Length: 112
Length: 116
Image (cartoon, rainbow over all chains, first blue to last red; front, side, top):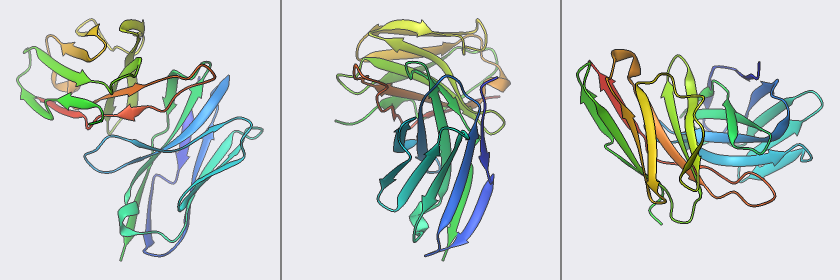
């Protein structure tokens, strides 16, 4: 069964600190992996998309890594801000990329 | 562009009633997706269209759910009859897939459905 597991389920950090969110997947055949940010009451917004040949991709203070051999990805947030408080969802697509398998998300809270 | 537009933003209805959710995708996008999000199950793909044609509806939970896309700028998701377990946030997303791979999906703000 295709699965995407994220950890931790929730995380609280202080403003200015860094954090790393993890994503393990068993989806096959792999097409690409995406990280989404979802603010409360809003739809998910894409942060990064990586194909199997990409090891890392950055979007401002967000850096995603991918190890296609171990089927693991991480999202690193640098110098966190209060506005980073949100759910972060790892999404893996198969085949042509239309079928998305979603992780359960990590709920991040950044405190002042 | 205004992004993906969904209506209504909130819907409260009684069990047994028909519910219709609406979506206007981003102009020029040829794929449209309907998702459901709950605390227990997270985000689930219900159905997606390509060029107004339903491609995969394997995620549609029951025959009570149906979706249509009569033209490139409008889609509906209908639940008839509705049940309390249908309470969730329903998202519509659209994308334009380049020939070489999957395109970015842009999500609407969602419709929060409560069935009492």
